[in-house]
Length: 114
Image (cartoon, rainbow, N blue to C red; front, side, top):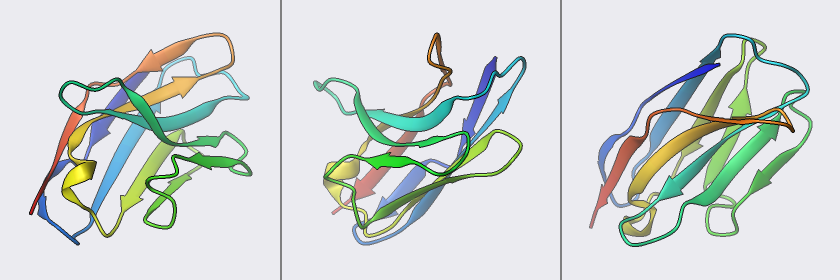
């Protein structure tokens, strides 16, 4: 399984970014795809994830109402991030979990300037 992430960058406070992560290879269902982030000096934390059916989503409390996760039928997951703040600055990692294994994509930097 390979995960290719894209969409990070630099944005001002209040701005928006959209992250994408395309999964390929032998992906088993059911599964969950999502995004984690890690800021300097902090542990990696879950941002949002979505099941392969698309019926269940989970969000960190800090992003509820601002971020939206979605996925298409081709194992691509998106994270729409609105109302960004400097506290959202981190390296964002795409994750796929098939309830037996975890796969990680390369990180993509998101920097929010004040």
